[in-house]
Image (cartoon, rainbow, N blue to C red; front, side):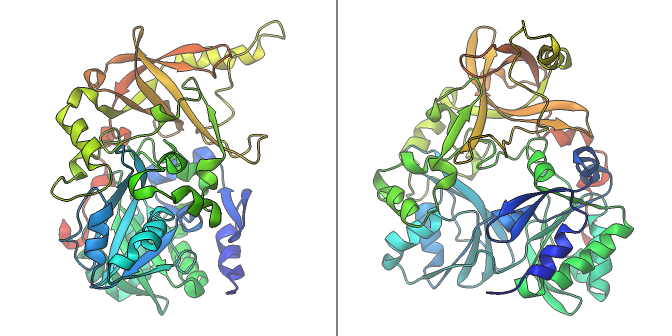
Amino acid sequence: MLDNSKMVNSILNGVSLTLGNPSFGSLAFEYTGVNDEARSMEESAYVGTTLMYTATVYDISGPDVVAFFNRFCVNKFDKLQVGAIRHAILCNEKGQIMTDGVVMRISNDTFRAYCLAPCLSFLFEKYGKDYNITGKDQTGQDTLFQVAGPEAYNIISEVLKNQVDKLDNLKFAHHDIFEISGKAVRILRLGMTGNLAYEIHSNIADGDIVYNAIWESAKKHGAKKIGMQVYTMSHTPGGMPNINMHYPMPWYESEEGTYLGFSDYLDKNNAGYLQKNRRLVGSVGENLQTRFVTPFDTGWGNLVKFTHDFPGKEALKKLKDDPKSQRHVVTLEWNADDIADVYKSQFEGRDVIPFDSIDERPVDMYYITGDSDKVTYHADKVYAGDHEIGISSMRTVSPYYQHMISLGFIDGDYTDFGTELVVLWGNEGHPQKKIRAKVSYYPYVSQDQEDNRTAKVGSNK
């Protein structure tokens, strides 16, 4: 097994809290603190490594690779070019999202998929014989360093030296091969929240050299390392509904059609932990079907192409034809006075039964639950008056904007900016608090359109 200790030690230099990780030993949870790290992505830049530790990577290669992806994804891949990426979405027969991720075309006959396994690996094992393709698990073989924020371009251009012109011509959602400190790297230009961002992929054996070169440059530009806590906090203000964060996935609830046998596959490969051992909290309670989402719920309905067959096509076509049945994603900005009431209840003496704590986590991810064999998912009911209209998920504190926000998956009649709604805070059977919330900017970061998070760089100016 490859010794990654030098890279891991470099990544963990300066860390204050870690989480255990079976693949890499430790996962950085926090470096200089939530407020400091969270502000870096708006004010300077951040260097993140969380996705390298948590994302699956799976390659499909062969002459039929396009046909294979077209069969199972809601969108099509015929026009995906080498050097480009595409958002891929896999659904079950009900049209509920099984997983989504990024597919990178790295050669004419090879697609590299991030976060699509184990769904993708199951589909390959079950249906791959119908195609001239091969599949290979690449998880843990490459680095995935993220650099994002106003200073991201200056950081990366400094380490690339005489390759800056090439970087300037790298378009959004495209990737190319560069060299950092004599090591080959693949750089992907992203920035899903409108900010300038890059991902740096290299052979894991070169990880220490590449990471240290990036970090030395990043320090000069005021960048911060971010841990897993702040990485998860970025998705709600960025308007990025995320698997395992904003919603669970119906892996064990999809034993029909295409995914018949998936439950056994997950158990056989010890791959179903995140969906099998769920602890469901928040006022939504045990209602799993309400927590599952479709591409229309998440704002990705435009990606669904009905010109080909795929799992969930019939169910999604019904949703498309009946807009009133769709939920829509919005940002909810929570009322400060109501939040204070929840916090205050913790200190009113033993004669008062307090509301469920709202202050101990800056984001509704439960890393330590006292229920170590389960993964916790939080979702709260959303009301317009007395009418339940959807759910709120991934409550997040924004140190930069100094607000508490969440994403809401709600009825389309209530999505206008400024609409006053109510989030019901508290687990079933506990004291519950109606917290006023208003529909706000989506993505939340879009309220700062004038700043350089949205700036183009180099020859794209």
